[in-house]
Length: 279
Image (cartoon, rainbow, N blue to C red):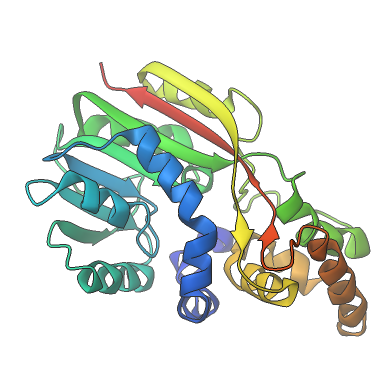
Protein backbone atom coordinates (compact mmCIF):
# COMPACT_ATOMS: atom_id res chain seq x y z
CA UNK A 1 0.00 0.00 0.00
CA UNK A 2 1.55 3.30 -1.03
CA UNK A 3 1.69 6.40 1.15
CA UNK A 4 -1.26 8.00 -0.61
CA UNK A 5 -3.45 5.15 0.57
CA UNK A 6 -2.01 4.76 4.05
CA UNK A 7 -4.78 4.59 6.66
CA UNK A 8 -3.00 7.31 8.62
CA UNK A 9 -3.70 9.74 5.80
CA UNK A 10 -7.44 9.17 6.05
CA UNK A 11 -7.46 9.52 9.82
CA UNK A 12 -4.98 12.37 9.85
CA UNK A 13 -4.84 15.14 12.40
CA UNK A 14 -6.08 17.57 9.74
CA UNK A 15 -9.27 15.63 9.05
CA UNK A 16 -9.99 15.07 12.71
CA UNK A 17 -9.54 18.73 13.60
CA UNK A 18 -11.66 19.80 10.62
CA UNK A 19 -14.30 17.24 11.55
CA UNK A 20 -14.71 18.78 14.98
CA UNK A 21 -14.33 22.42 13.95
CA UNK A 22 -16.78 22.28 11.06
CA UNK A 23 -19.04 19.40 12.12
CA UNK A 24 -22.31 21.35 11.99
CA UNK A 25 -21.63 23.16 8.73
CA UNK A 26 -20.10 20.09 7.10
CA UNK A 27 -23.16 18.08 8.11
CA UNK A 28 -25.43 20.74 6.63
CA UNK A 29 -23.51 20.72 3.34
CA UNK A 30 -23.47 16.93 3.10
CA UNK A 31 -27.04 16.27 4.24
CA UNK A 32 -28.69 16.25 0.78
CA UNK A 33 -26.04 13.83 -0.49
CA UNK A 34 -26.52 11.56 2.52
CA UNK A 35 -30.29 11.67 2.09
CA UNK A 36 -29.91 10.82 -1.59
CA UNK A 37 -27.88 7.68 -1.02
CA UNK A 38 -30.14 6.55 1.84
CA UNK A 39 -33.25 6.98 -0.32
CA UNK A 40 -31.50 5.21 -3.18
CA UNK A 41 -30.58 2.28 -0.91
CA UNK A 42 -34.05 2.01 0.67
CA UNK A 43 -33.01 0.40 3.99
CA UNK A 44 -35.86 -1.47 5.65
CA UNK A 45 -36.61 -2.15 9.34
CA UNK A 46 -34.71 -5.13 10.67
CA UNK A 47 -32.01 -5.14 7.99
CA UNK A 48 -28.37 -5.88 8.70
CA UNK A 49 -26.41 -3.19 6.83
CA UNK A 50 -22.71 -2.65 6.07
CA UNK A 51 -21.56 0.92 5.32
CA UNK A 52 -18.11 0.90 3.72
CA UNK A 53 -15.63 3.78 4.05
CA UNK A 54 -17.99 5.26 6.61
CA UNK A 55 -15.51 7.78 8.04
CA UNK A 56 -17.22 9.87 10.71
CA UNK A 57 -20.47 7.99 10.33
CA UNK A 58 -22.63 8.84 7.34
CA UNK A 59 -24.73 7.42 5.87
CA UNK A 60 -24.51 4.73 8.56
CA UNK A 61 -26.08 6.94 11.26
CA UNK A 62 -28.97 7.95 9.00
CA UNK A 63 -29.50 4.30 8.05
CA UNK A 64 -29.54 3.28 11.73
CA UNK A 65 -32.48 5.63 12.24
CA UNK A 66 -34.34 3.97 9.36
CA UNK A 67 -33.82 0.30 10.20
CA UNK A 68 -35.03 0.58 13.80
CA UNK A 69 -34.04 -1.37 16.91
CA UNK A 70 -34.40 -4.77 15.23
CA UNK A 71 -31.81 -3.82 12.59
CA UNK A 72 -28.05 -3.35 12.82
CA UNK A 73 -25.69 -1.14 10.84
CA UNK A 74 -21.91 -1.47 10.90
CA UNK A 75 -19.79 1.54 9.96
CA UNK A 76 -16.60 0.14 8.40
CA UNK A 77 -13.47 2.21 7.71
CA UNK A 78 -9.67 2.07 7.58
CA UNK A 79 -9.37 4.78 10.23
CA UNK A 80 -10.06 3.90 13.85
CA UNK A 81 -9.84 7.61 14.72
CA UNK A 82 -12.64 8.58 12.35
CA UNK A 83 -14.74 5.67 13.55
CA UNK A 84 -14.37 6.93 17.11
CA UNK A 85 -15.98 10.19 15.96
CA UNK A 86 -18.74 8.14 14.34
CA UNK A 87 -19.32 6.19 17.56
CA UNK A 88 -19.62 9.38 19.58
CA UNK A 89 -22.10 10.83 17.10
CA UNK A 90 -24.23 7.69 17.17
CA UNK A 91 -24.19 7.56 20.96
CA UNK A 92 -25.24 11.21 21.15
CA UNK A 93 -28.30 10.24 19.09
CA UNK A 94 -29.10 7.27 21.33
CA UNK A 95 -28.59 4.71 18.55
CA UNK A 96 -28.13 1.23 19.99
CA UNK A 97 -28.22 -0.47 16.59
CA UNK A 98 -24.98 1.12 15.41
CA UNK A 99 -21.53 -0.51 15.54
CA UNK A 100 -18.12 0.23 14.04
CA UNK A 101 -15.39 -1.99 12.63
CA UNK A 102 -11.89 -0.89 11.63
CA UNK A 103 -10.49 -2.76 8.66
CA UNK A 104 -9.72 -2.96 4.95
CA UNK A 105 -12.58 -3.29 2.47
CA UNK A 106 -10.43 -5.66 0.41
CA UNK A 107 -10.50 -8.22 3.22
CA UNK A 108 -13.78 -8.03 5.12
CA UNK A 109 -13.82 -9.82 8.51
CA UNK A 110 -17.29 -11.29 8.00
CA UNK A 111 -18.73 -14.64 7.07
CA UNK A 112 -20.34 -15.27 3.70
CA UNK A 113 -23.91 -14.00 3.34
CA UNK A 114 -23.86 -11.73 6.41
CA UNK A 115 -25.61 -8.55 5.22
CA UNK A 116 -28.93 -7.53 3.67
CA UNK A 117 -27.61 -4.25 2.25
CA UNK A 118 -24.32 -2.42 1.69
CA UNK A 119 -23.75 1.28 1.14
CA UNK A 120 -20.86 3.66 0.58
CA UNK A 121 -20.91 7.44 0.18
CA UNK A 122 -17.83 8.98 -1.47
CA UNK A 123 -15.76 5.89 -0.64
CA UNK A 124 -15.69 3.46 -3.55
CA UNK A 125 -13.36 5.73 -5.59
CA UNK A 126 -10.56 5.14 -3.08
CA UNK A 127 -10.42 1.34 -3.04
CA UNK A 128 -7.01 0.58 -4.58
CA UNK A 129 -8.31 -2.68 -6.07
CA UNK A 130 -11.94 -1.81 -6.63
CA UNK A 131 -12.75 -5.02 -8.49
CA UNK A 132 -11.30 -7.11 -5.67
CA UNK A 133 -13.17 -5.08 -3.06
CA UNK A 134 -16.45 -5.50 -4.95
CA UNK A 135 -15.96 -9.26 -5.16
CA UNK A 136 -15.25 -9.34 -1.44
CA UNK A 137 -18.38 -7.30 -0.77
CA UNK A 138 -20.44 -9.62 -2.94
CA UNK A 139 -19.22 -12.52 -0.80
CA UNK A 140 -20.57 -11.06 2.45
CA UNK A 141 -23.96 -10.08 0.99
CA UNK A 142 -26.97 -12.35 1.25
CA UNK A 143 -28.75 -13.49 -1.92
CA UNK A 144 -30.88 -10.67 -3.43
CA UNK A 145 -29.07 -8.06 -1.27
CA UNK A 146 -28.13 -4.74 -2.89
CA UNK A 147 -24.93 -2.73 -2.79
CA UNK A 148 -25.42 1.01 -3.34
CA UNK A 149 -22.70 3.56 -4.02
CA UNK A 150 -22.43 7.32 -4.40
CA UNK A 151 -19.29 8.72 -6.05
CA UNK A 152 -18.15 12.09 -7.33
CA UNK A 153 -18.81 13.02 -10.92
CA UNK A 154 -16.42 15.18 -12.93
CA UNK A 155 -13.84 17.54 -11.45
CA UNK A 156 -15.30 20.19 -13.76
CA UNK A 157 -18.06 21.35 -11.43
CA UNK A 158 -18.33 24.47 -9.24
CA UNK A 159 -17.07 23.14 -5.88
CA UNK A 160 -13.88 21.65 -7.26
CA UNK A 161 -13.19 24.09 -10.09
CA UNK A 162 -13.55 27.18 -7.89
CA UNK A 163 -11.15 25.84 -5.25
CA UNK A 164 -8.52 23.31 -6.31
CA UNK A 165 -9.05 24.23 -9.95
CA UNK A 166 -7.75 27.72 -9.15
CA UNK A 167 -4.71 26.27 -7.36
CA UNK A 168 -3.97 24.02 -10.32
CA UNK A 169 -4.11 26.98 -12.69
CA UNK A 170 -1.29 28.63 -10.75
CA UNK A 171 1.08 25.70 -10.23
CA UNK A 172 0.32 23.33 -13.11
CA UNK A 173 1.58 19.77 -13.06
CA UNK A 174 -0.61 16.82 -12.13
CA UNK A 175 -3.90 17.62 -10.48
CA UNK A 176 -3.62 14.37 -8.52
CA UNK A 177 -0.82 11.87 -8.04
CA UNK A 178 -0.95 9.22 -10.80
CA UNK A 179 -0.80 6.38 -8.27
CA UNK A 180 -2.71 8.18 -5.52
CA UNK A 181 -6.37 8.40 -4.52
CA UNK A 182 -8.64 9.83 -7.21
CA UNK A 183 -12.05 11.23 -6.15
CA UNK A 184 -13.10 11.33 -9.84
CA UNK A 185 -12.18 7.74 -10.69
CA UNK A 186 -15.77 6.90 -11.65
CA UNK A 187 -16.78 10.20 -13.23
CA UNK A 188 -16.96 8.59 -16.67
CA UNK A 189 -20.54 7.35 -17.20
CA UNK A 190 -20.76 3.59 -16.95
CA UNK A 191 -17.34 3.08 -15.38
CA UNK A 192 -18.58 2.19 -11.89
CA UNK A 193 -21.38 -0.05 -13.17
CA UNK A 194 -18.81 -1.85 -15.36
CA UNK A 195 -16.79 -2.76 -12.26
CA UNK A 196 -19.91 -4.01 -10.50
CA UNK A 197 -20.83 -6.23 -13.43
CA UNK A 198 -17.30 -7.62 -13.71
CA UNK A 199 -17.35 -8.39 -9.97
CA UNK A 200 -20.47 -10.51 -10.46
CA UNK A 201 -23.30 -8.20 -9.44
CA UNK A 202 -26.63 -8.55 -11.23
CA UNK A 203 -29.34 -5.96 -11.97
CA UNK A 204 -26.69 -3.22 -12.13
CA UNK A 205 -27.96 0.35 -12.42
CA UNK A 206 -26.21 3.72 -12.70
CA UNK A 207 -27.35 7.32 -12.96
CA UNK A 208 -25.92 10.82 -12.67
CA UNK A 209 -27.52 13.51 -10.54
CA UNK A 210 -26.86 17.06 -9.43
CA UNK A 211 -27.65 17.46 -5.74
CA UNK A 212 -27.63 20.48 -3.41
CA UNK A 213 -24.14 21.13 -2.01
CA UNK A 214 -24.20 24.37 -0.03
CA UNK A 215 -21.88 25.79 2.60
CA UNK A 216 -23.72 27.90 5.23
CA UNK A 217 -20.99 30.49 5.66
CA UNK A 218 -18.38 32.64 3.88
CA UNK A 219 -15.96 31.60 1.16
CA UNK A 220 -12.98 31.66 3.53
CA UNK A 221 -14.58 28.93 5.65
CA UNK A 222 -15.43 26.59 2.82
CA UNK A 223 -11.86 26.87 1.49
CA UNK A 224 -10.34 26.21 4.91
CA UNK A 225 -12.51 23.14 5.36
CA UNK A 226 -11.80 21.87 1.84
CA UNK A 227 -8.04 22.16 2.32
CA UNK A 228 -8.21 20.13 5.52
CA UNK A 229 -10.40 17.25 4.38
CA UNK A 230 -9.46 16.84 0.70
CA UNK A 231 -6.44 14.61 1.28
CA UNK A 232 -5.88 13.66 -2.40
CA UNK A 233 -5.12 17.32 -3.20
CA UNK A 234 -2.47 17.82 -0.52
CA UNK A 235 0.41 17.16 -2.97
CA UNK A 236 -1.04 19.89 -5.22
CA UNK A 237 -1.27 22.32 -2.29
CA UNK A 238 2.30 21.53 -1.27
CA UNK A 239 3.54 22.79 -4.66
CA UNK A 240 2.25 26.34 -4.05
CA UNK A 241 5.12 28.69 -3.14
CA UNK A 242 4.50 30.55 0.10
CA UNK A 243 4.70 33.89 -1.67
CA UNK A 244 1.92 32.86 -4.07
CA UNK A 245 -0.68 31.98 -1.44
CA UNK A 246 -2.14 35.49 -0.94
CA UNK A 247 -2.94 35.76 -4.64
CA UNK A 248 -4.27 32.18 -4.85
CA UNK A 249 -6.48 32.62 -1.79
CA UNK A 250 -7.86 35.92 -3.08
CA UNK A 251 -8.80 34.39 -6.42
CA UNK A 252 -10.40 31.39 -4.76
CA UNK A 253 -12.45 33.69 -2.52
CA UNK A 254 -13.68 35.61 -5.57
CA UNK A 255 -14.35 32.39 -7.50
CA UNK A 256 -16.31 30.79 -4.65
CA UNK A 257 -18.28 33.97 -3.99
CA UNK A 258 -19.80 33.74 -7.47
CA UNK A 259 -22.02 31.01 -6.01
CA UNK A 260 -23.01 32.98 -2.90
CA UNK A 261 -26.63 34.04 -2.39
CA UNK A 262 -25.77 36.24 0.58
CA UNK A 263 -26.16 33.48 3.17
CA UNK A 264 -24.91 30.26 1.58
CA UNK A 265 -22.43 29.17 -1.05
CA UNK A 266 -24.61 27.13 -3.43
CA UNK A 267 -22.30 24.93 -5.48
CA UNK A 268 -24.39 21.89 -6.35
CA UNK A 269 -22.74 18.47 -6.50
CA UNK A 270 -22.52 16.34 -9.62
CA UNK A 271 -22.51 12.73 -8.42
CA UNK A 272 -22.86 9.18 -9.68
CA UNK A 273 -25.24 6.69 -8.05
CA UNK A 274 -24.77 3.02 -8.85
CA UNK A 275 -26.06 -0.25 -7.46
CA UNK A 276 -26.00 -3.97 -8.03
CA UNK A 277 -27.72 -6.99 -6.55
CA UNK A 278 -26.37 -10.37 -5.52
CA UNK A 279 -28.06 -13.06 -7.59
